[in-house]
Image (cartoon, rainbow, N blue to C red):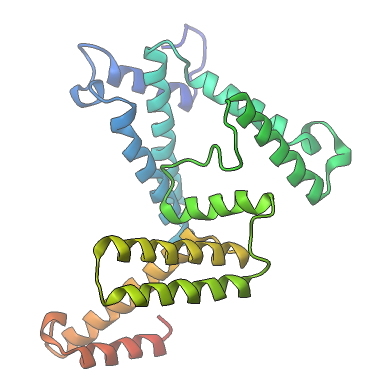
Length: 267
């Protein structure tokens, strides 16, 4: 707790709560036994829930709630690190503050570097220096392996493109996509799982490249497609229910007709 006479901020309160949850003997039994590895999946989940809240539309209350959940994850990891004598929450905040200052000299220093090209160059140069300081060498060093696969594919190819390893345009990527589709088609007859998996992986990787060349985020576009599929399939289910049917009892033709109807109404 804070010393007498000091005002406790909401963040101070949150840090105090987290410490109490982890306190030996008096804390929460579940929280006490967690570690970085066991909490990491929750951290990822909370980040996705923030993304979902944004995608669902403007609901300030929900977004505030989800951002709070995500902040709690940062506090959780910082508390576990502090218990080990590594660093605390304030150290995390100071480190990101210094990093943002280093990466934005056009805001916090060199006013001459305000054009977009100079900003991008400064940002990438600073990140390269940070990777070098961590002894991460190579063009692809530092791209987290735990990223969603489509996002990682996009980042890997973006890194390679910086050194000239890239298709000249989106049309060239489409040509490669057709080539990969033909290779997959050739494997269908043998139906060897490992070969099919390899070819489908190649297709997905090229699609991530195509999204990048078009200036799109592959993960975001697939999430949008998932939401569209969900809306349309729920329409199919509702249409069938109005006729006293469930999807499992309907024919494919009946479901296709309802699907086309969903498209016609803009879903």
